[in-house]
Amino acid sequence: MANPSNNKRIDSASRVIMASPQTIYQSFINPEALVSWLPPKGMAGHIDMFDPREGGAYRVTLTYEMDHSNSGKTSENTDVAQGKFLELVPDKRIVQSVTFDSEDPEFSGEMTQKWFLETISEGTKVTIVCENVPEGIRKEDHDAGLMSTLENLAIFTE
Image (cartoon, rainbow, N blue to C red; front, side):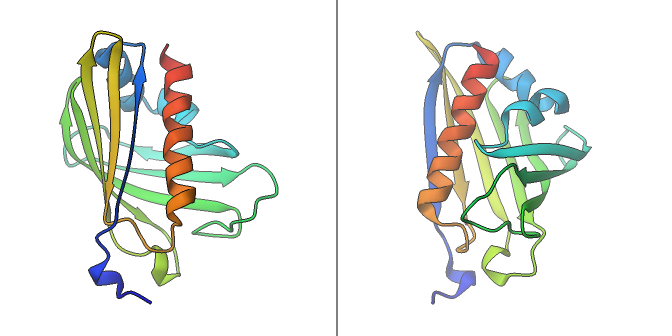
């Protein structure tokens, strides 16, 4: 098993969304909007705390809605994540650190999540880059979750 401190895995996904960068950015910094599109398919979300400014923090609980093969990171059916906004560049970029509340060392460590919003003729190309992904998160599951979140964002904003 790899040493978690050497874990440098990067997962990313992108999608073109037919909405303006402004619309997408606003749906990210508004907690009611965020919780409606952020959870991947099969999960529901709840924002426990949300302070959208550089240096501000948030806490979100994601709950699996039905029987699922993977157990949650925090409890059997939940993932609780603490985040901190490292950089907020309106309509262009959101950088945050994410830490999961978990007793399992495979989910420990701080993941950096970067969201890039790029204006193109069809709308906005949204790219998510996750750096230092905890090794307990299977790449296939994470890739599917990122694509599901982008699909939700497209449905929400288009």
